[in-house]
Image (cartoon, rainbow, N blue to C red; front, side):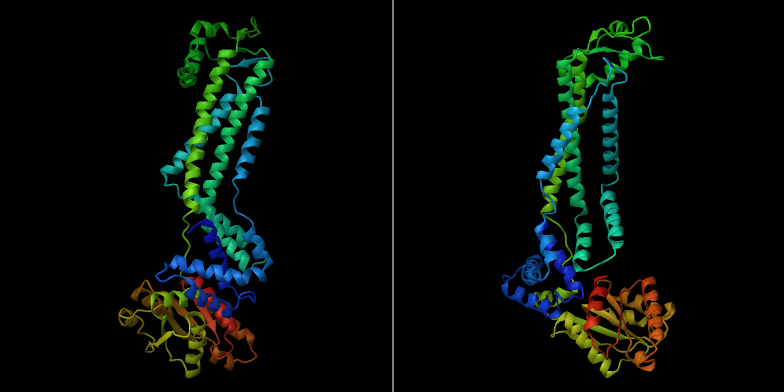
Length: 467
C-alpha cells in the first residue's frame, strides 16, 4: 500500500495491541464489523484493512489529540529539498576553491580535496551495492529500534511510531540519499559560480611548487587529472617546458602565467567529477523513493483483525488447545474460550485435544500434523516447574508439526493463585521462571488466571501474539 495508508494502518495496529481506554475491545469489534459491511465484495486483504483503518480513525482521532497532530504532520515535504539545495549553493558560492593566495597552486588547490572526498563517497556506494545494498537499511532499523527502546514513556502512539520508523527505514534512506546528493551537486555548482565571480574581480595567476616532483612528472599528473575536462573543453594541458616555466622557486617567487585556462579546466573537472554524478545519483534515489512510497509492505494479519479476515475468507478461526501433563478444569476451559473469543470472535472454533502425558512429547508431532488451526495453544499449569527436557520438547514438537501455525504457551494461574492466596511473591516468582524459560526457547507466553477477570489478559494475549 502507499505510504500514507501504510502509516495510518501501522498506527491503528499499535492502538489495537495496547490496553488503553482510547481504543477498547468494543471499538475494535465495531471497526471490524463496519469494515466488513463497507468493503466491496471480493475486496483484497489490503483493501479490507485500509477500510477498517479509515473507520477506526473516525473514533480515534476525536479522542486522541496526539494522534491527530501526528497524522497532520507530513513525514516528508519536497520543499525541504529545495531549501537544502539553496543553502548548499550559497555555501559553495561563499567558499574559496583556490585559497587565499594571490596565485593558484596547481598541486595544492582545495579542488583536489573536494574531488578526493567525492571519489571516496562513490567508492563506498559501489562497495555497498556490491554487498547487496540491504545492510544499510538493516543497520538503520536496528539503530532506530535501540533508540526507541531507550525512551522513558511508552504508549500506543509511540509504539506505532517506532514500528513505522522501522518499516519506512529503506524509504527514508532513499530520501536522505536524494537530499545528500542534491546538496553535494548544489555545493559544487556554487563553488564553480564563486570561482568565476572571483576571477572577474581578481587577476589570478597560476604556478606550482614541489620539493620532489620535476616538471615532466607534474605535467603527466596534471594531464591525467584534467584529461576528461580537456577532452570536453578542448583546452590542452601545456607541455613540460611550459609547466617548467610555471614553477615557483626562490629565484622566481611570483607566478606569472594566466590562470584563465586552468580555471576552465578546474570548473569542467568539478562538473564532471561532482555535479553530473551527484545529479545522476540523486535522480536514481528519487525514482527509488517515488516507487518505494507507493508500495510499502505492512504485515496485515494481526490478532485484532483476525475475526474480520476470517469472516472475509469464509470461515471462523480455529484454536486447538493442547493440555500438557494435566487436563484443564471446566472453569479453565470456559475462561479460555471467553478470552479467545474476545480476540477471534464469538464464532470461534475451540478444539480441546487430548492431554499429552509427561514423556510422550514427541507423539504430539504426528497427532497435530493432520489438524489445521489458526493457533495452537499449549496449556500448562503455573504450579509446574518449567523444564526444557519436557515442556521445551513438547513446544518444539508442536512447532515442528505444522510450522506455518503459530504456537502460544498458556500458563493457567488459577489453581496456584488460590493455593497461595495472599503470597504474591510466590506467584511472581513462578511467573518469572516461566517467562525466563519462554524467552530462552523462544516462544510467546501468556500467564493468565482463567478463573478471574479477563480484561487485562486480553491485552497480554494480543501482545504475546504480536511478539
